[in-house]
Length: 124
Image (tube, rainbow, N blue to C red; front, side):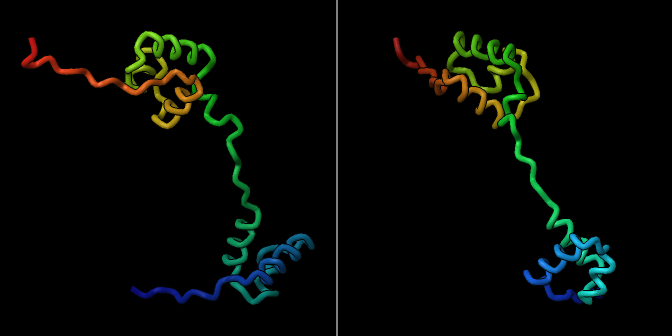
């Protein structure tokens, strides 16, 4: 297997030049030629420059409606020691990840740890 040699990574100055040349309206090919860099390297740098992550604005609240949350609250009141999976399935709220279930239950604030059942074996 023959591997292609890798060039040196772009310096901060080169990245700044790429941004300036983009603002001037030059294409990736033109920028690559002027910097004596491969076009693919320039295109990847442009993608990195333009990348913006999109934070979730709803913080997972959209996974369950207000009606669903009321159903979940009712189940928690009646069965405080159930697991989150059992609570949500009994409330009819399905296909929600464990992390989101826990977030919702923390928001409700009525979560109790499951109690261990005492065994009555050998006791009269």
